[in-house]
Amino acid sequence: MLRAVKDASELELLAAAGAAADAAFEEIRKVPFGGRRESEVAADLAGLLRGFGHSQVDFTIVASGPNGANPHHEAGDRVIERGDMVVLDFGGLRDGYGSDTSRTVHVGEPTDEERRVHDLVREAQEAGFRAVRPGVACQEVDRAARAVIDAAGYGEYFIHRTGHGIGVTTHEPPYMIEGEEQPLVPGMCFSVEPGVYLPGRFGVRIEDIVTVTEDGGRRLNGTTREMVIVE
Image 1 (cartoon, rainbow, N blue to C red):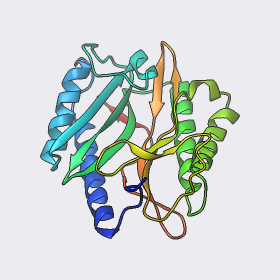
Image 2: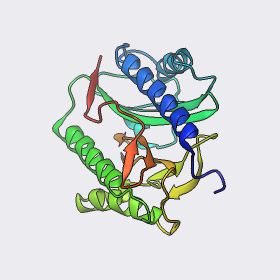
Image 3: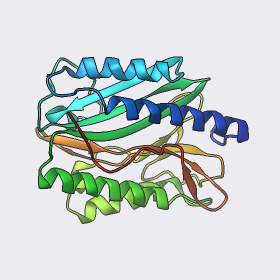
């Protein structure tokens, strides 16, 4: 917790790392997904992170189709197919400070259910973000995001905490999880990343890094949270 509150120079470095990760996403959405292995897309993503200034790539999760239902899936040899939802979760260190973002893309046109679940996660992520303000307990961010998913009947499929701190490592305190009563303080930085994971079918996660401001929160990731269609 000694590292939890960032000063102005640290916030600039975290914002720059977030912008670099955003730039990598804008490029990866242009590459072919269908017919390629997850590991191949993950390698492209790692190269883009390095190209945009990351000295260290900590993870490039590419979880396609049923693999997306595992929040901690590591990119493997599965060939991505048309009709797959694909969870992308990636980050590392740039100038000593971390990036971490998730977006979920679809290869070709999604089904109505896939759109509905993606919209639900987007709404939950927005609710978590809007809960951020000084003095609020960390657990309230988790509760806000989880309430949206619970209300839609998917609560049992949101199977991890809503967020974790970030700084000189990509995972550190504070944690946005039930039972964490640590109050938010301006300068804290953490992820807001709800998800829905349907076993054997697909998963959706949307993640931004957020910093606490004097009157709310500010996202350090700016790429679209709408569903992105890839080839």
